[in-house]
Image 1 (cartoon, rainbow, N blue to C red):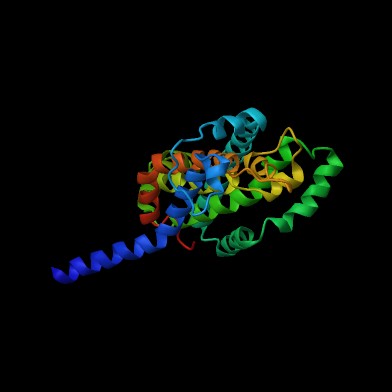
Image 2: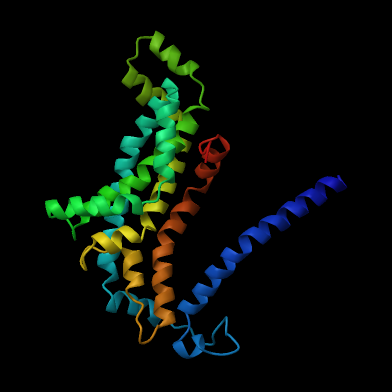
Length: 273
């Protein structure tokens, strides 16, 4: 009993050590976003100010057209994630059931290859067809990142699901599409949720593609936050508020889907990750 208690305390301490830097950075960013510039430059640092500067958030949306950039991020991430699931889930199922190990290796290589490797040739292609500066190049190039993630997650998940139900459905006369859509997909829902969350995170936080391919009207939130930096003066309060605006949607989505994420992870949905 004592040994089990010590092990639990040790595990909790280890988790605290690992997670505490991220929590500290997030709380400090929140503190910066709620302070006036005179408090942000104070020494020793002030963590909780006497007055909260809610105007920092209003300034972000008033002076930087963040509603437009928020819509651009939602459009790019939502479309890229939907297309990635539409392509990646059936591909992962096919690779898992056919035991196509070479195809899985190709997917793994595509997942590990830096996105910058695709950026220059795709930029030249988009420039040739006249799409640079529009939303479509960002959606298409985000698929380069999201599709391999979805495929790899779903390969690992479908490899852990029992095949007996699918065989029984086939014996009863179900077609291959019916087996996939009516038997495999419902079972794989936790894995699909994990793939969706990972695709959203990688797409939403992508910075480099937006810098190169977007115009002033089509840039996404990470690019908009970067453009708030200037050589003359950095306003830490509005900048931290903008960073929180970028972080909040993914954070809320993860919190809402945490049960299904845990279920998908424990079922082996990220096997090989």
